Amino acid sequence: MAADLLHILRSIGLDEKESALYLAGLSLGSAPASAYAKATKLNRITAYNTLEGLARRGLLTVSRKVRAKWYLPVPPEHLAIEARKNADALQRVLPELRSLQGQDRRRPVIRFFEGWEGVRRVYEDTLTAKSELLNFANSAVVRRFWPNYDEEYVAERVRRRIRLKGIAPDDEAGRKVHGEDRKRLREIRLVPSKDFDFQNEINIYDHKVAICSFGSADHLFGVIIESVEVAETQRQIFEMAWRYASSMKQRS
Image 1: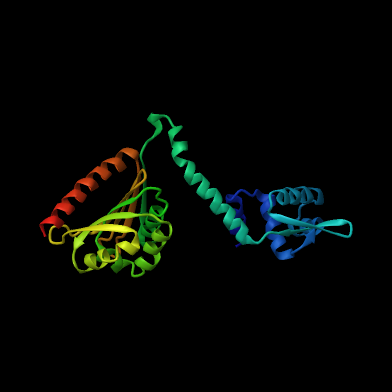
Image 2: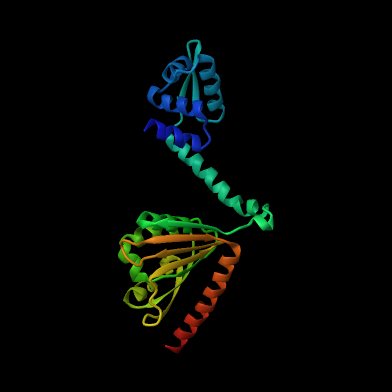
């Protein structure tokens, strides 16, 4: 467990000594540099200098007792907040970073995910969308595999204010879901279920296309394709289907 914690702390920007001292401080509480050095087996000068660096970064608080400084780590929740801030900042500048790549280096990235946990990871990625989600889905199929889909995924999408336009089969499940469009930040158009009985879900967002297949319980998988060209073509295909769905609605 300790090795896992060190690895995680290093992944959010702490080096090996900083990570070891922060973890030691959670057990020690407020303590002088000598106690930290003893707990981590670092020499006192290294421990003191590293603790001072952590304090300057706001990861430790410092108080004076007698003639020594005592250090206390900020709560772990503070680290989680900082990690989210860094992740959000990186997500915001990704388009600018990509624009710095030469055109010949902007190759499509394809990621494949297997099993239910893999499919969940694909859905989690759609929640990073900065654009509207364009969606082909079978309302009944996804909820059969994910009974808490509305309470977990849809509720989180709404919380993040990500709007969705979707095309779904006109069946009992599709009509029920369609009836909740307004409060779910979405607009769904229904198409004849006998002609369009989707067995996978496609989401188009930003520069990505995400596909989740629900063929059978033992063969679930997801794919994320990152490509500006592929995403734009799929948007055009969606728009064509969206207009078709509108014409079907006007005829009924």
